[in-house]
Amino acid sequence: MSENERRITHIKPEFEVTIGSAYFCFIESKTNDTITYENEVFEVPTIKTLGVTREVSSLPVWASGDIYKYLNQTAGADIALVAVTLPQDMLAKIEGSTKQGGHTFNRTNDIEREFAFGYWGENYDRSFTYVWHPVCKLIPTEENHATRTQDLTDPQRNYSVKVLPFNNVWRHKYSTKQAIEAGEQPLTKEEFFLLPIYTENQLIYLGNTPEPPIESENI
Image (cartoon, rainbow, N blue to C red; front, side, top):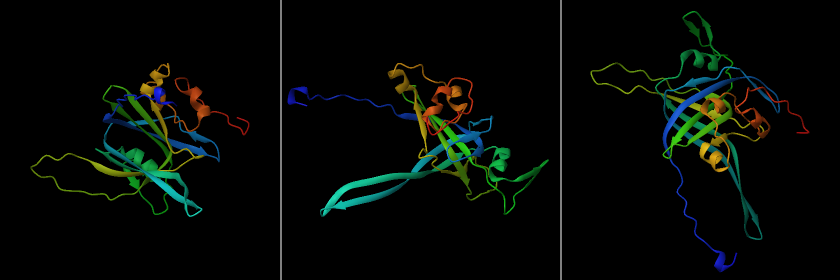
């Protein structure tokens, strides 16, 4: 680029003003390259804060007495989730607890369930960002209980979600603003969160009746 071709481009990026609902979809089965999800997606509109911390492995590559390249690889992520509460029946299913009527039994050998975890955020320009994490587990955290006092308290519970990469994908993010800029009709929340997406081959099912894609090595 010559000096005459240089230019300054003014960019005014959007910023998030609020977090929206969270979504949970249980994994029915999983192979090396395919995930089958249950048909029901649970929407939970009780989220207060959500923080995502990536697990990044770094490696400086030295050559000829200097750093030749610096390699980074995301190994997953940890989500710190604060909510008013999460549904007890859903938590029992995640934890692999046994339920009978009003009774719940938590055993030492409970088999925990993996699930897809999603959420959306609204930006100041009224655009939206949708996110799916295809494979997650709920990590046990402290359960705190306190007595009621004369002061009003803001109810909240802390949860920890572990994001596990699947075929090198740990997050699928969608921007309605970027879709409009690309000349596309933006997806609604209902269209995006109806089916967790973990590969580009599944994008044809967004906005349509979702069916699990048939994948092969030739795709």
